[in-house]
Structure formats: structure tokens, C-alpha cells
Length: 375
Image (cartoon, rainbow, N blue to C red; front, top):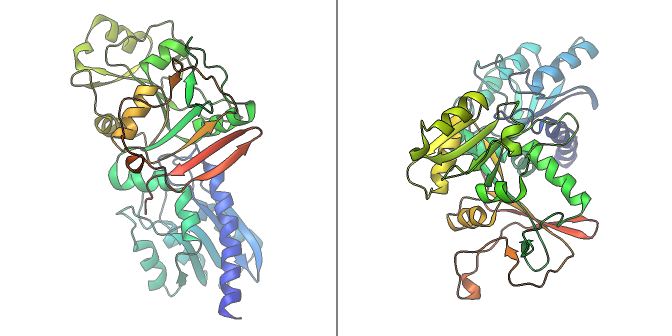
């Protein structure tokens, strides 16, 4: 078989593995999304993906299904979007299972930057005489695990911006009214993001103005941690993020001045709110992210408002995002813009969004961007 044909076959089955991996979005954090496909005689005989945190890895599902469909896997190939693990964690090493099952070949998309793996999985396979091909559809495989790659290397959460604006850049009219800027199709995408990322962050002004619930309204979705930046502790018990905290996933980031106050102790004990305490009342975004990462939250959807978004851009902590643009114009200079507070006096000093792609949502447009690339 020609090299070109082999390449195309490998890409074909890796693409299937990628689509399988995406099914784990929102359920596996802080683990990576992984898909696996076992192929024998150009026929798929086993598939799998990592379904939930702490559960079996993709390779386990794929190999066990393959074993049910074939008595001899010695001429089979397994396609995996991420290098098979080589260490004992919540599950045994997948690299050793591939060896034990006697497969001939392993095709890998992304290498694993986790120091516990980092090439060791590949080495186990090669030491056992298994042919290994790496970096097949690498960019596509890397893309689905940007959150994992950043967090495993830095313990800093991946920060993804979501913002809905009018064509003239407003997030609210001068009256404060903001419902709804975008159409229902665009808002469905927002729910996808709320399910995908482990946490969702807003400033206290958004809580006071909109009283959001910050939940994921998708079928079988998982609610994110609700992170409120509230230096002066203005959040009240009547707000939805407190009233609807039965899952105990509301986190308030506030000043150390509020620690052990009567209100704080009441919120902790009776409303089951978690707290992160920082010095002063003007917080560094980098410090906020570091503290949230220490809790074990690997990714954050930043939803606003103006001051928080502006600070995130100014401190250059945004990894990626999507700005939803509606076909609406308010035309009022007193309407609230989505970003303010710092100046670029010349056009060539303007902040640039990188790796932009456009998504169409009926009459609305999404400008999706990627500022930083990991792995």
C-alpha cells in the first residue's frame, strides 16, 4: 500500500476518533477529551471515548469492544487522539493494555504534555514491538484539548470570553436593558459553552443588574461553578446564584476584609457558598485565576461585565473566545459598551484578535478567536 494511501486511511480513522472525543465535552474535566477507534482489515471493530471524570479511558472501551468482535487483534490498529497514558491514576495504564491485547500498530494524534506521561506511553508501546505513528491530524487533536493542555502544565484555568454585543458595540441600553441582544440560535451556542467549561465568571455589577442563574440549560448538561467577582461583598441572599445553589457550586471572590464577617459565615454555613479571599479590593486577574486553579477548576467562561472583560484584555489573560454580534444598533453614546477603561491612541496600537473564524447564527454573527495555543 502506498504511503499516501496509508496517510489518508490514518486521517480517516483519526477523524472518527476526534468526533468521538468531542462527546466527552463538559463531563471529563479536568481530564482530557479522548476518542479511540480499533480497526482490523479496514473495518472498525471497536470505538470508545472518555465519558466522565474518573471513568474508563477511551482505549478501554474501544479495546474491549474490539475483543468481542475479533479473537485475534495481532494485525489490528488503534487510533487514539491523545497519547495513551503510562501511569496508574484512577484507571490502569492504557499503553500497557494495548500491549497486553497484542495490537500491531498505534496511531496517535496529540502528544501528552502531562509530565506523568510525556512520551512514556509511546515508549512502552515501542518497547513491546508495536509500530507507533504520531502527530496524525495533530492540530485538530490539539484543538479539542486546549483546556487540558494549559491546566496540566500551569494549573491556571483556561479563560474563554463570551460576549454578546450590538453592531455598535453595546452590551446594554442606557436604561440597563440587555435582554435579548442576540437571537435564540446564538443563545443556544452560549448554553453549549456553559456546559463545556468547568466554571462561569461574572462581576458583581452583572449580578446586581441581571440577577442571572448562570446554569447550563442543555439536555444532560452539567452546571458550571458560578464564580462571582465581588470585592465589597454586595451579593444578596435574594440573588438566583445564592437561592439556586443546591449543587453548592457558587463561589464568591471577595476581599479578605469580609472574611469571618457575620454575613460571610452565614453564606458559608446556610447557603453553602464557597469563598476565595484576596487582599484589597482591586484584584489582579492573574491572581484570581491562580486561586481558582488551586480549587481544581480547569476552565472558565467569562461572561462579563464591562469592567471584568476590559481588565481581562488589559492583563492579556484571555486564551480564546467568541463575540456574538447582533444585527441591532442602539445609536446612543450612553449605552454600555462591552469594553472600556484603557486607550489605544493609534490604530496600529489596537488590540488584535488572532485566528479568527466566523460563525453564522441566522441574522447574527459570531467572531470566534484563539489568542493562545497550547501543546
